[in-house]
Amino acid sequence: MFDKVLVANRGEIAIRVMRACKELGISTVGVYSDADSNALFTKYADEAYAIGEPPASKSYLNIDKILDVAEKSGVDAIHPGYGFLSENANFADACDKAGITFIGPPSEAIRKMGSKISAREIMEKAGVPVVPGTGEPIDNVDEAMEIADSIGYPVMIKASAGGGGIGMKVVHSKEKFAASVRSIQSVAKSTFGDPTVFIEKYLPEPRHIEFQILADKYGNTIYVSDRECSIQRRHQKLIEEAPSPVMTPEFRETMGEAAVKAAKTINYENAGTVEFLYSKGDFYFLEVNTRLQVEHPITELITGIDLAKDQLKIAYGEELPYKQDDIKINGCAIECRINAEDPLNDFAPSPGKIRRYRSAGGPGVRVDSGVHVGYTISPYYDSMISKLSVWGRDRDEAINRMKRALYEYVVVGVTTNLPFHRAVLSNSEFKEGNLTTHFIEDNNILEEVKKIVDADSKASRTLASALDDYNPKVAAVAAAVKSYMESTQELDRRKPK
Ligand code: ADP
Image (cartoon, rainbow, N blue to C red; front, top):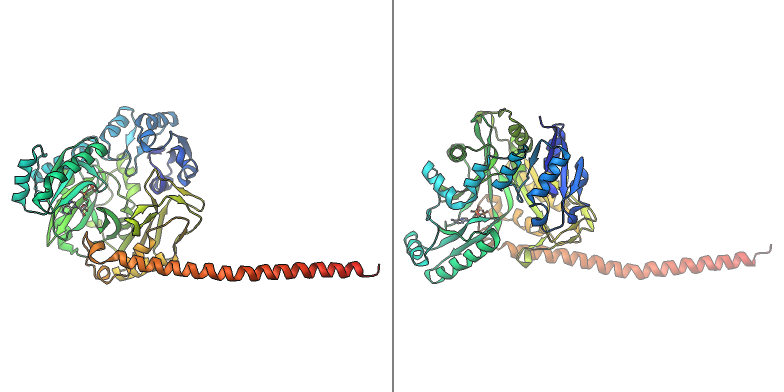
């Protein structure tokens, strides 16, 4: 096994990977930006090195600086976590060139999946169903309009290089089409440096269902169950669960085999995720995430597999220790992404200092986090506080357990999305498993959130006014004590010596 691994990431995922290393007896090296010099992960690492100031382009995305630390500290391998350099094929190549193992797939697989257009084309050729649409970049808006007409509105305009829910727009009518293409082209150019866009059919009432993949260097590729990630805001996931409530063993096999086919087509190695949209009984390939996902803990909870440790073992050259039939699903797991953001202000990030913090615990609860009391959530990075995951013997138990865990969770100092999670977990449609990517709007979740926030602030107002009431009384008691002490001293003085 590797002796020493550098984790080129921050926050909870840096700690998650270092935990896996610790269990395997591997020493860890952390890298951090000036904004993170006091973060937990820098202390968790056996060695940690500063790599520059925020934003990420000057530190976590700076390949030279990271490789410099890797060489200086003498690591065998680099784990990129998620985000940052995790899906950067040039970084994987640079690691190879430096003789350091990149813990992830071969750069060629990353490159092929880095462009959504090329990914669609490859999967279509391999016989994996893709969302109806164009496989071609849009050059000419008039021509594209004809294509959109033939697909039928609503359509989705997507940036080929897009990610993280950025660079996509739903267009409901011809009138808005040309302006929408131009707006996505400009977002794509400024955010991803590539203005290429294409069109897809906007699927009605879709569910986001994805498959975890594990593949070793010897051609063994398996799917490790499914996850449903339909509860999203701005096309970004907030609550995930495993397995999907719509999954049957037969359907899992069909989708899982399609996911394995997708992975094999690009000679995939290591852990990855094949994402699909599911709509009205059919499923369509969306993309491959060539890294460990944020939501990997729920798969670990229902299968007992440690995906981060398997990543290290596969990268080291070990053979997968399981066959497809060895993968058994036990119960149900749910993950809530606890973010410092305000659901009632369009989920805007709410960076700041955490003044009080108590995470949930007890049976079946897992918290992946990198924060503590006094920690400042920086405006430079994502606003995640933690990933709260629970396991239950069945979905009902998992839901009730998550409600209990959310009740226990206390974060003071920043606005969080805890009320949002409470609202969703208490929703009857959620309990029924009736999920779509429009769940928040279709179920008026934000109205429920407002009620919860109002009730919370009413409770804190009541507390504040009780304290106001109480404080003068405390002051009066203190004054009385003082005057009593003074009078007894007076008496003392008067006592005959
Ligand atoms: P990103 O790479 O930015 O994460 P994805 O292509 O994975 O983007 O899509 C993110 C989300 O956007 C999906 O989970 C889904 O909610 C929505 N979405 C994407 N494509 C479509 C589509 N063709 N029809 C309906 N919803 C879509």
